[in-house]
Length: 378
Image 1 (cartoon, helix red, strand yellow):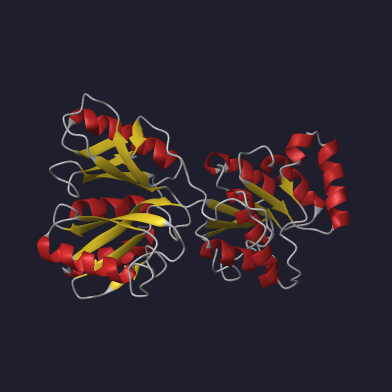
Image 2 (cartoon, rainbow, N blue to C red):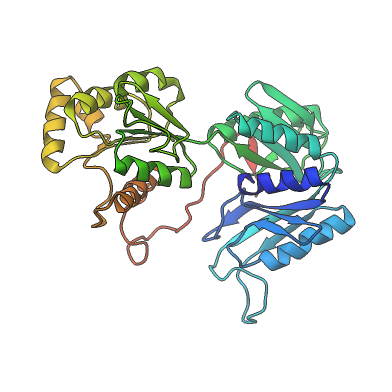
């Protein structure tokens, strides 16, 4: 939804009607995860993708149909048959798609969502999909502070809001169904999570840092560049960074510790002991999901010795990715940034860093299990 939100808001403000088509559940090697969204305008324009091209044409027609009838639609797509023109997924996966027209009831929701997303605030939307009289229209906007709206039953509202908060904390989007018999209605509920962008902290105002900041933005991070040298740490030199901070790296990182979570990436590119040792002492004691430090193997050995002498434990030191990046053979700042980005993705997603084909025995798209008082749809 984040990929199409800007265009959807532009259509809304221009008075153009449109519909949303959202992946709500997948099996096996489906090409896009739950939450992938395509928006279809009455003008014929379309933004976003739900399957990488496999079923887009069929869903596009469903989106236009929803605009004509005002009614939502729910479809399941699996493997196509021997007919080359059959609508299906060539990858062998299965996905379920929910198509809903955006009407006047949706407009306040869109404005609120856009405001929260722009402000970097966590928010989730719970929408009835099937099983209720207002499928596709009844919804909750859920925030850590509470929720607004209704799904048609107060007990259902409380259960769905609690589930949405848990899914928001895990940044998950998916289909759930209430497991409480006290509800007067028992619809399937689509929970869409909009967590703030993850943070990337890049330390060291060098050319490699500029390339890392650029690829960090491409990956969806909110990027901060920090260096103690004001002459080098400038917005002009790092236009892709969301913010450029002039401060001692360790002092700055300690000051923003509350914003660091398991999605955070910390890239230490200073490769100077007076900067990176005190900085890594702070970084390795945060919950950051990725911590990498640039330098040669000799620099790495010296850094590890200094950190050990500073009191860092073996478990803390084991979290450090150093020398930073996967061995791709590249040397330029851009190639190095790609190797760092690849290592971040591998660390965050549990990848091996090897070739995908012929080396992995698990599924290409691992399934996420939902755990909440609102049970997954079966």
